[in-house]
Length: 295
Length: 295
Image (cartoon, rainbow over all chains, first blue to last red; front, side, top):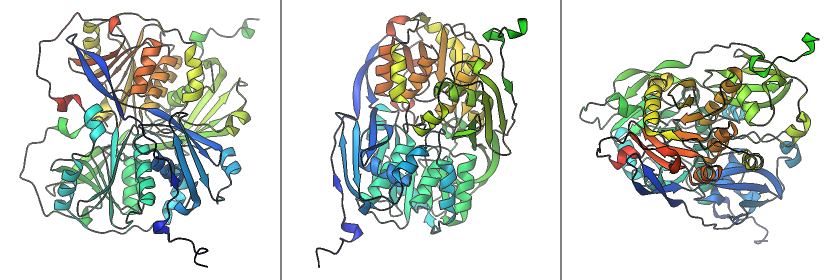
């Protein structure tokens, strides 16, 4: 009888490969003086997802945490609804493939594939339509946050972006708690891969789903806000900017959303009433240049 | 008989709407001092493409040049192969739709849609597979470029990114000539929308397809390099960085590829032999911080 009892969700883990791949490589580049120097580059590799032997799509990824990326992608796209549905995720860089085996799925594979999977991306392709319906039902906890907690968190995060500092060309994302603890951090070529990887980690590491803070170095576009909200997160912090639709969604969902968060500076775009300003910095001159970055 | 003769390509123009929409809006944000200020935000809006009444996908876009974006997207995705195939592109922001009417297409709509359209994006979803085959046949002219021409071009471009300077959160792309002339410039939420818009402009404005330079504020990932190469462009300049796969493709295609191009600084990643260093700047100290940006 005991054997027949399913393990509690918090203990279940699917079979996972631990595919390793280099995250950066070095190349020789020439500068404007004609001098050659060694430059690190972020790796970029295709990974084709096969769900129960059916090809879903190919992602281009840094490859830092591919099993979590695949799991989070399938979760955020609505292919799977619980970790227990996943039996195994096997990533093999030799063939650039991720083989995912699941229990019988709630979604009809053939039907979904015939509808074609329109993926999220850097403004191109979107899950906006169907996601919006799900978002209507979301009830996110409007818990308060202190300015001092934000500064502590930014300090904790400042040294985590290893690949970016070495090679640039990647975005970092993190799941954090108000006490400054960074529960998960990942970098990837694209903002969307990074947030999907966190969604996977949320399940794989059985992270607490309460009072989470989502941090990203990338822009808070509508799709980033949607993905964070789907993780029940009601505090979003970006080192970069936000779009008008990202703001509209944040306001509609009651999110506390900060952009341009760097050092002691930030701009609160939404949910200002949830932020306690308990650590106002000494006034400094901020050049417009510093505030605007290509993101 | 004359009526039966098709117009020369350079003269043909499909029927185009000229949909207008605001590119930025202003909102009140609170800074770290608790002071409120007016902040401009880049607009972001969905645009669903209907090709001969069949839904293709929904893009999230700034909306600066939607007809060219739709045309360039369909071109880069291989839906259409010549401007003459397009009868009309009607964008209506009221319903967030772009209706595209074409001559009978070379591609089978039902077949393509049943395969589902896997879109390019910020590292997520990719046209990599089928694009690579087409790339093998590309012969790109390895014409030489002068450092002085690059600096002149960067000067010309420095004032073109209106939305970015006002609101941030967008990427700019340009088609230029070695003489510094900017033939087309556009901004959008995503790097991919911006380059697709240029591909549309290339056809709509009947731009010269020889000796073009592609400039982007975004990263040169594999998909950006592929799209530029598809436009027969053999010189790529980015204000940001590049990925390892972007570099591999550039080397394979014999592209002259510059990254971190800002002010007098740049790094030549590929095709160094094509660059004539005729304007070496006076040596200045460059902090590592300046060289690395979140892109």
